[in-house]
Image 1 (cartoon, helix red, strand yellow):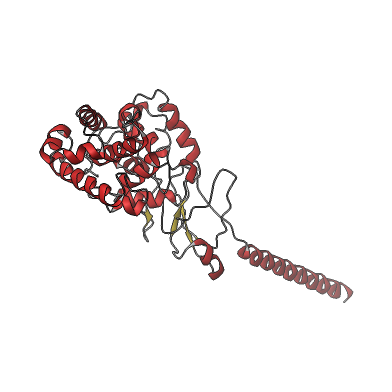
Image 2 (cartoon, helix red, strand yellow; image 1 turned 30 degrees about the horizontal axis):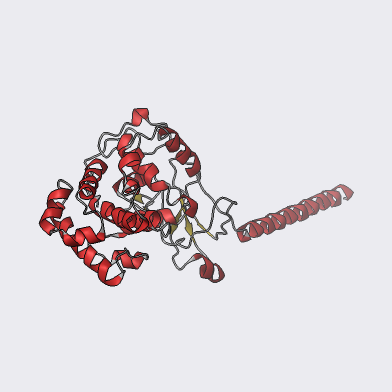
Length: 339
């Protein structure tokens, strides 16, 4: 009988120990659920992370929180389910957030490939326009170069700027006196040269009437000018006024950002939908790229797109990122022209 009682005592003790273990496990799980963690994936990982979690973002000293942190996505992304207190600080959109984890390494590799400075943008980009002119004339030259650059190679734009300068028309006063036909003839063969000549005459009138012979010094003012879109406006603000208000995204920046998997939107199916326009790409990039990189990213990627990551038949074999890039060695179709 004593053996039976002893056996029952062992059973009861084991049951109590099991109950204690279960309670401890439950407590740990509940505690873990309360923790807010941020999960990202490596650049090389083909997996797409999509989890509903409560997120608390932290930044190192070199990365700043962007005011554009809102509705942007990427293949290495995370669905954010914020509580009401977090929504006040993090924005109003509960969507996938683009956070590439190794973008600095990617930029470093591109900088290494661009070290020679042999791309057309390095010597003939809009930043070089009117570099020896007085400040007011240089700002106008930058605006003209930006306007002419749409759907036009840098070499062609540079040639047009040189001809305008040689004929004394690369100033607001000089262009005001010139005829639209003469301007059209001098800027040929830039894309849509006839239309752009008309735009330039209208721009000159606005600058004389509203800005005392100078160009607008605000983003809305530039966007109100004929022929000036977001890409050009941000470039002009950056270069002419030294006022960085956003990233200048042209066709090269748009294309390469999508090829690298830096921008896009997570579909319910888990697939990644690429950004369709440069403006979508700009908003997506500004959500995670630190503002101190906003100016340099344009000439860096433009030159990279002109020399290696070209629109058609990119030179993936010569690219230092060909083992990391999700688009490496894939057949690319002839892209639609983007102004």
